[in-house]
Length: 229
Image (cartoon, rainbow, N blue to C red; front, side, top):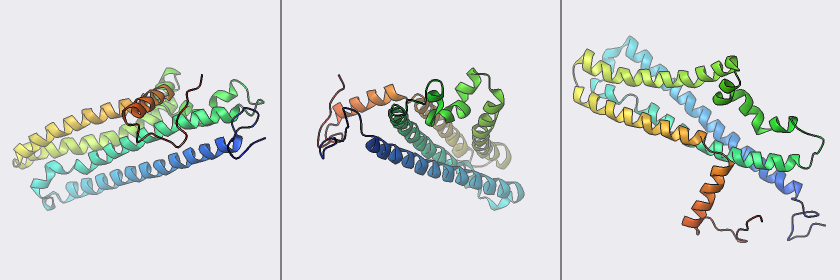
């Protein structure tokens, strides 16, 4: 029987407690995804407006602003990278909790158990898996989605350097300086996304233990921690 100080029944984890944690994690991911979609909408809207004005009324754009036009886009991508990392981190918790819940449903067996929940999305959305399994048609949609957004940002960035140097013939020093900045940002964000894609349960365990060791005051609970034997 469960007691006020013990949420387990018969030595097993409490299903209501697992469900509560699972719902909290899922809600957090849905909230982050909403913010990420809003950022994508901002990126597309900004690019569309700037591109339309630049193509139809280029004289209305101050030449001094041309080299810095892409800055908001790169800020959006940087913010999206942060949100993406949070989603990957929360998804590891979701996987653990899903497996805990599936332990209480023995009728769901292999291989069905492998794809129920979070992992079902990975099987149809994660590009490395799709390419490895030769599901090229689905992979193409994912590549077009993310590749298209990157192409928009890169096109606007390249134009912001090319126009001052080869068309307007002014603010060239600023354009070249910003080109160096954009290249640095590109590689930094590429590294950020690469790190995000490497997030899994093992890395989360490693990072959490390291953070707890380095910042014990920030990772402290009333009841402390205990390692599973």
